[in-house]
Length: 177
Length: 125
Image (cartoon, rainbow over all chains, first blue to last red; front, side, top):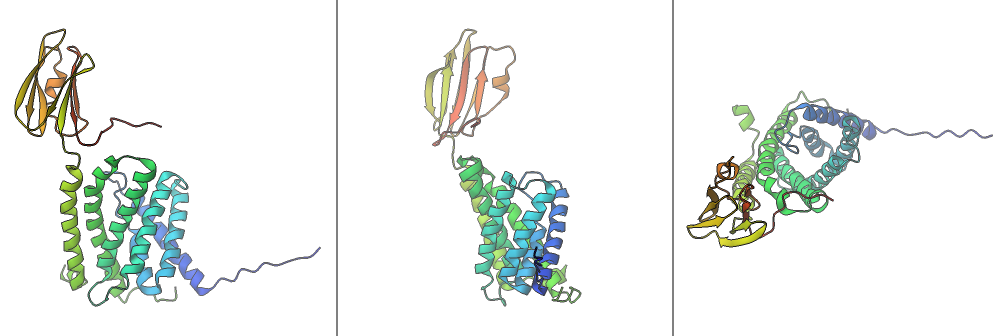
């Protein structure tokens, strides 16, 4: 009988992703605890983490943190593989793609707030499209568009401001989390 | 407050303004999209009249209890009076969105608003 040892090498990058994803999951739980007037309208506080990660560590890390956050939060809140999970996934995918493009905007002009708003709009866009194609195959879902768009603008701006503030503060924990 | 405003870069204002404009534009686009086009009046379940919601008009539909008066105005319609005992369809007031319906069950008259696209009450599958 042979003993084989499988060693998982945990890099500093892995630890960082895990920590940041944990913080994002925490914010997702806070998000879920905030009462919402309409299902689907949430502050999306976890996106603050996504923004900070994107601007500090790059797009790849942001995708990892975002993906892990959705997976873990859905398991904790009990909607893993439920429609809400796929809506979440669709929204996050589209907003990550948007962020991937938008981060090349000149930083002197466009800060975290721009990125946050664009991502928020991409997020609702992805969710509405998936809802239209899959959950409610009727144009009636688009009646909610103005509400979702207004929420995306408000929360996108607020989250962007918070992310900008955290990035600007020297109090932020050092890069090697 | 000013320290928060300092976090906004010039382009950010542009994005905020652009998005606000988009939200403003989305209102008429999505909330009038299927504008009420016509009223369908049914008597005993059969279509009694299909009226364009363009001009002012009044119709009288005869039912088993008496006359139900329907009033049509540009973009909206209502049951003006009905001989039914509970007056639910009258109290509903103006109907202006596609899919809205007022049913005067005792007199077997219904008034429904239709748009360009068919709207469903509910879907199940």
